[in-house]
Image 1 (spheres, rainbow, N blue to C red):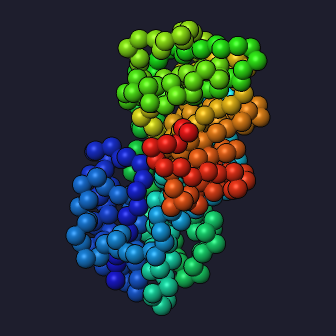
Image 2 (image 1 turned 180 degrees about the vertical axis):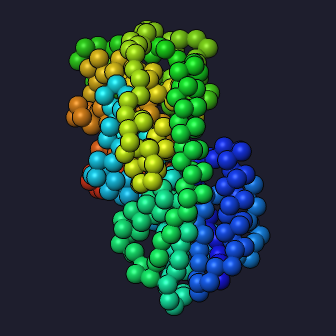
Image 3 (image 1 turned 90 degrees about the vertical axis):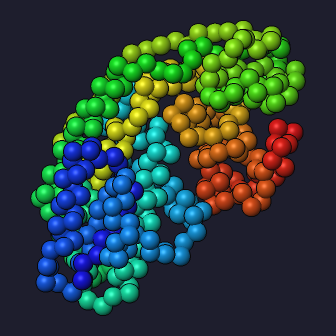
Length: 375
């Protein structure tokens, strides 16, 4: 019997996607004289196989979302130790270090898919023949190896047609992404703000959100009072300067992506899969300025970084650089974080495994009501 299993992956261009799905349909309906066949394919946005009885993508895996989230972070670190895609850089910084959340989300999808494959193997006797493209097979093997659950009864088979579709899509999407990066202007402000109290006061650094930064300033930043020198970077444009703050300009430097078309990053392997995640990304227009913002802010003496999230390049790099400079990182958890020295969490129920992984010392946490974190 032939079944199909989807996993969330990168976007496939419309003409190629149609060809890709036609190939999947033909494989699904082909009379393959094997006891058990599984076609592993990349999720299509139309979900044309959603109601197909042969679709096993909804198979329960008995793993909580928090567990998958924590595993995806561990998988991210596991691949980092293997120096995967270490040559894809901008301004001498690895993109792998800058796009933590984007990689983690795709790794979580792979982990869920790997658990389903293991369950299918456990529920069936005999060999399971898995058909897919070479890149997907390589990455799925890497995932199963990380989970230490490589079933012995899997027989892998790549097809030239599926591999061709994925490889051509990768090349086209990479070119499009790089061109878009060069021509699309950044939507991040090119300035930041500084309030000086006195030279002996500690200096803290904080970012403000893209949406409604004025409200965040009034309800959060303003409550720090006059005990600190404060540096602010707002990811959204402010209507006017905060009172008693001086406006400073970001120092810009040129930077281009390097290593994106190296042979080992191109086709057929797990490295090329991760390289696609790094290169084919819609927000590259903010990549270069994000690094410049971090460098400009750390030109000043900073004693502590107050961090709300680490979901974009700018805040991720702020934390990485603070860690490097041994600056105290205080996480006021509002979204996702990957590293901090101390954190405040709304409640014990939100002290998840991923938050524990972010803390070097899990005793350094305080719980507060969701409306009183800053206190």
